[in-house]
Length: 254
Ligand code: NDP
Image 1: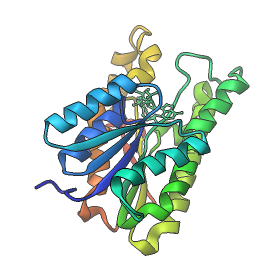
Image 2: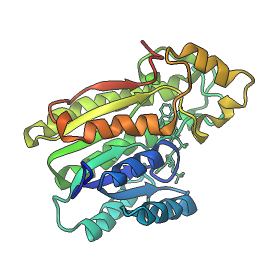
Image 3: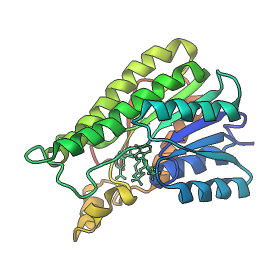
Image 4: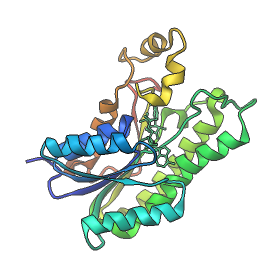
């Protein structure tokens, strides 16, 4: 029997990349997983089919996490499957956007890109967490996916780094808000992970090799490296671990 048997989970950005790996891990441990996608409908349905074929339970819901009206619809759809609140054991705020190859620097990054990153990476988790609060069951888990960008100076991606620092702040506030219910809230901060998110960076000659060299563990992160860290926090044994920023970066930001 998996360690999350009987639990429910909601993973934003769950159709692709790190989110998909988290969905696979949680479902494999027995959780019934709601995966939220924005545009990747085909990938979402394929992942639901994959999880179901493996004997797990998952369903997909379309929503833009930066839009409060869509979030209300998202949770209504969740309630329809999970039943009356409180009905949620695990919330993973994973959806996020980066610069996707655009100039995101402090010197010349655009206001539009800054606003979009703030809306998805900071306002999104705030709104989703707010809507999830009355639904979270005692002994639940909130896991936010931040970045080591929230820790180190990054003038080449200053706005993105700010969004991930904001998510750290939300993590601390959430942890205190839900502590009396035995619910934990922590942030996992990945280093570079091989997903579409950094596709533009990886096209630069030598990026992968340079990243592996700079990483004490000698390689780039894979989505399942982050999913493993999320699962660690969701296990019963992690019940006293809350309000932390936990780097999952092979030692990159030590
Ligand atoms: P991907 O680009 O592979 O996936 C991003 C996910 O976010 C997609 O599932 C996408 O959904 C979803 N998403 C984007 N915007 C919205 C929105 N407005 N509403 C709902 N969902 C949205 O990236 P990763 O898997 O790599 O990134 C996941 C998280 O990890 C992000 O928060 C990112 O900041 C963080 N991270 C990633 C690192 C990396 O190197 N890859 C390093 C450090 C942190 P859809 O496809 O359906 O549109």
